Length: 332
Image (cartoon, rainbow, N blue to C red; front, side):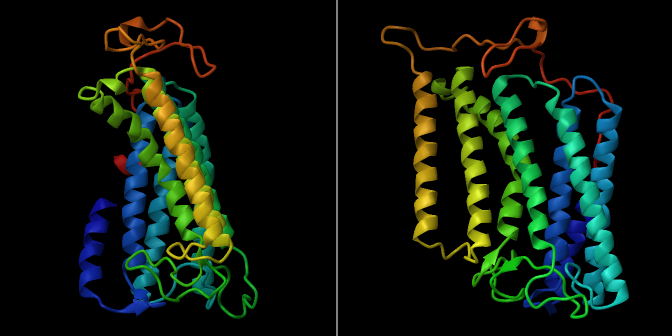
């Protein structure tokens, strides 16, 4: 998939044709990059399992196959100069869009099964565990939000050749942001879909970044601080996802928010800053106390077998050990 994305970059630069007002190869390129990142992320997440679960491995394979199949249809339709999504203008177009729908359903089901497989394990520490958990939940909701684009809009019918749309309040194909194509004149459901799905990459990486920064910033050394910041970031990310979906459903462009949207965004920002301040305050040493790592309540490595407290959970703590053979198809 990575090689395909590189080839599509060349095609995008060479072929100047457009479709619905956008470069013809923009959509295949975006989907190829997205599916490549998505597949590699799942390969990494499934490798974090302490105990291999065959059904989790099969779910990973289905994720990869469904993603590759969807991209293949999009590339094929672009080569024909036809729309891939919401296109029922001919029996072939309708059949291809139907096949994409089946792949999306398979992707959603496999995403749910693979998420359960990963959620059953705790990771190396609590911040990483919760970063993975929150990322999985939000990304699953982001994937499911694509269903809002399906179904006929007013004035659409199978006879008319178009069923469904990503723009709210206007027909698809109007003015949009460069490359992304998100509408600048109406609401666009692709924004929330994109934001939600990519929580799978951003939120699990945050605790790793905080751990790396803690070597230079002592305030981040206590695990409780990194956990608080991770939970705050997860809450803010969920709020941004909900806000972008809500904004699109009201027919409002991302770059032209109204006062209500700005007020909601401001409240979300203030809540995030307050949460971050509380988390950092919890890591400040008491007056006269030496600075340093706060004692962790989570066991790692050789301490496996001790209890973990905090966040309402108990269990066995182990270092992040790769499960034997846990893979996803696209990483092979």
